[in-house]
Image 1 (cartoon, rainbow, N blue to C red):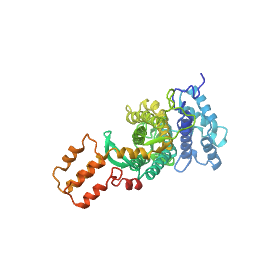
Image 2 (image 1 turned 60 degrees about the horizontal axis):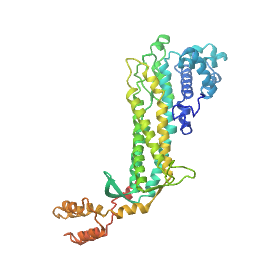
Image 3 (image 1 turned 60 degrees about the vertical axis):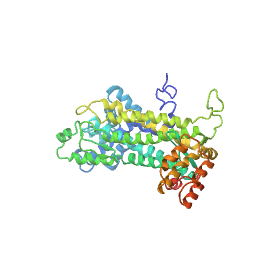
Image 4 (image 1 turned 90 degrees about the horizontal axis):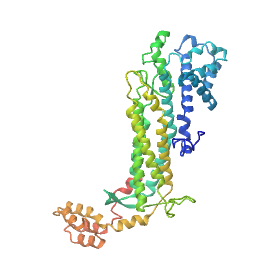
Amino acid sequence: MSLNSLAAISPVDGRYAARCTELRALFSESGLIRARVRVEIAWLQALAGPGGLDEMQGLSAADLAIATGIATHFSEPDAAAVKGIERETNHDVKAVEYFIKQQLEPHAAWKSRLEFVHFACTSEDINNLSYALMCLEARDAVLLPRIDSLTQALRAMAHAHADDAMMSRTHGQPATPTTLGKEVAVFVHRLRQAREALARVPIRGKLNGAVGNFNAHLSAAPEVDWVALGRRLVESLGLEWNPYTTQIEPHDWMAEYFDALARCNTVLLDLCRDFWGYISLGYFRQKVVAGEVGSSTMPHKVNPIDFENGEGNFGVANALLRFMADKLPVSRWQRDLTDSTVQRNIGVALAHSDIAIQSVSRGLARLEVDRERLQADLDANWELLAEPIQTVMRRHAVPEAYEQLKALTRGRRFDAAAVAAFVRGLPIPHADKQRLLELTPATYLGLAARLARAV
């Protein structure tokens, strides 16, 4: 069977392949090899720069550009060539080293310097920086823009529906009225906070040899300030230097990153369930897409599939993210290999997150508010005014205010006439009585509209 989207085991590369193109470029095998080449070339350039090795000095700008071009012009055929070398070496990072040497060997200035490719490095010096670069670009170029776009759509919805009164539900039961816009504003605020936590995660890297002590470096060139050189290289890649590691960078930043993304996902999973419920109640209608089928047997169905898809993919993503956050910072002694296969699934976890975010965005675009349905629920639940009535009574020290309203309304229907009759008999000032008589479930909204507009 040929490997294509129909033959893929993972839906990320099968059913959802078209929605993962940006992350596939980063986290595919080709993307990982490209990142490794970039790091190897950056280290080679650092060795040839200020504070580097004497033997690497004197290269011309044109010579250095040859090395730079290997990374900047890296192609799919180049990735295939690396995989061909790997079939002989049975070692993925060593294959990258040999590939770069092959590319440099025809150039006279590099011919005597080929052994400085991967100089004093352990594979993890290359791998930790490669994954860090992949995660950095995935966050800043894909995930954060996607979250920002969704946040803006939700903010626009919050403002557009700031005044649309809606009966809330606590414990699934009729509760104090709110506005649709304010309830959406809650998700805007939560998502912003979660997004900022993700954006703040420091993405760290190391380049310090087999067990983090620069042993090989110092033995070969004790005159070089290897700590400074390694730090300069890591920071030139846009990463934060980690000075204390074993053979591997401890992955603590990865745990922060995955936990932060999982919190974004959890906020949006909660949104999926709430919006699914509002669609079920009829508060939202979904725009019909021509040719789309909702059920193989029930022709009338327009299902909330985007929010269901989002909920499911957020769940898969978070299962992977939380596993990796717990697993990756744990390694036996100075290094074991359990992190290697796990890190190869980073792209899978991020892809399920991205698929889910896209589903929510598509679902939002299909929604239309049914204001008549919102109003109907409010009109049918005048008992919602038991709260403001008993609160005003308590202010004026009317005995057993809560208990009176509880006896009158708990588990019973309470219509406009019953509200008016009860209020007229209250021993409270005329102004307060008049204010309560003018109140309806649709106007008992507190500061909801203001809060919705302020988000």
